[in-house]
Length: 173
Image (cartoon, rainbow, N blue to C red; front, side, top):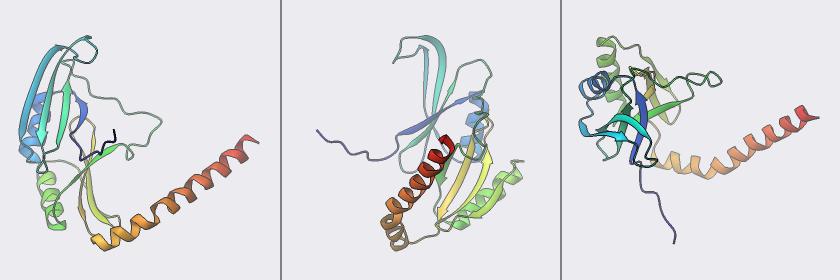
């Protein structure tokens, strides 16, 4: 039987303080707290590890979720990965909403980078209280422009892969 992924259900990340995380995502970003799971045992492994799992609902019905393990620790960044690489991008409806979000975040003392023009989207970047890099983004490309980009995507990726396969082979020699 085939399957078709429909949309993101949730993205989960560790948080150091569920209350602080709730205030940031609900009060500042406007995502309502929609569900809380409190367990002492991990259902998938039966491992003893008390936690609270909190879910914030986005307008499309998907969620961003966090695990608070009660130890006051956040996820440590990978020292081998630049800080800008790992992030979650959340979409808003317009560039005007990007600007409104930027003003609200900065008024709350959050350092915001951007607005950054990525040709197809405009984005701002900031860190949540857990060190997770968050991108708020709005489309600036049309559906027709995105359809053209999709036509080029496999060739663009193949060029990257071939370039790096050649450089890997040269390095090994």
